Image (cartoon, rainbow, N blue to C red; front, side):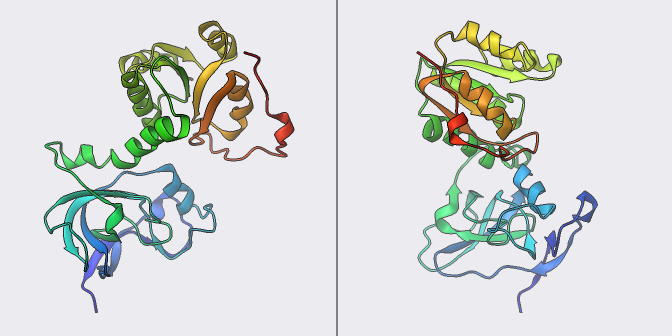
Length: 266
């Protein structure tokens, strides 16, 4: 029998106080997989959804949560080129959903999902980066195909992924429009790279149309699914909108009909 480790293993939905540490077996290796000694992990909105028992059919209890982690290779299975002691990051690939995740001392993942890296940053910083960076970068590059000189709206810019997306879009040379509902956060948006920091209130559509009268080239929607119609209405013909998350907790559009998708004349 495997030696025990400390983990947060849930057998059913719980509130935040139900995230208690208990013992679980150290996960065993299999060919092509790697065991990671977890040093840090981020906390993601999807894990909160899972904790509440509101995830989709790809998640089931009992489960150790955690869709990302950074740490050190503890052991490798047959056919794995990584070596023990190597720093790695891992995320997604069913982690914390189809397989046990990172809320533990050790986790086992497919070696294809273990990314080696070297850094002098502390684990407390590195632990917050993997999912945040890949979500922001993937949304901008794969989701939007954003190019230098294009305009992009980041709706919900003060979220961690939103702030990261602002910085990446700025580095790509795009004109970045970012929003917040808090006037005190407008300066933060410009500090990380937004060319235009806008308050998310009734004046937002007109403000965006003034900046991009022909319509936005691209938009990242972080606030809610129900905000998508307004975001789409501000995007030019041929532009692209990527739905990344729902900070408000609204993940679907009631009674959605594709015939209600708005268009913008160029």
